Amino acid sequence: MGSKETPDLKIILEFGAGAELLFGNIKKRQLSLNGAQKWTIAELLKWMHANILTERAELFIQGDTVRPGILVLINDTDWELLGELEYELQPNDNVLFISTLHGG
Figure 1 (tube, rainbow, N blue to C red):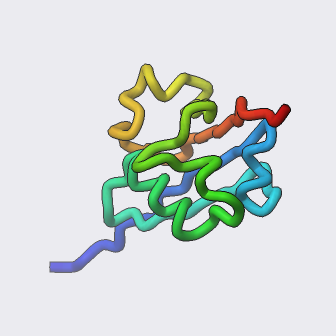
Figure 2: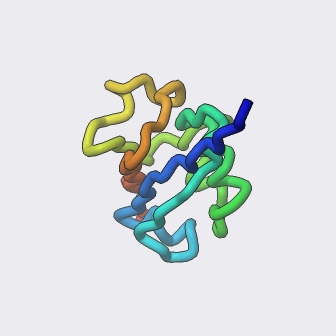
């Protein structure tokens, strides 16, 4: 029985309205995630926290989710309509994080 390699899951992450400042000031990233596992938004957030979050995690993560004030859009749709943390990422998904947190 030949084993077939599982292709990577390729997605795009985007950050706007200041959220990019927490991720090395990079507004857009193309990711290739391990395709052998199921990737939900919850798993993606853990990966982001461990691998690319460079500044003040408390401004992005609260518990197991994004903190209030961070809007999440998946393919231009509010993640609340897609199941939030339970949404299973699909090839070529575009995940956009927008900060509505502004100092004053």
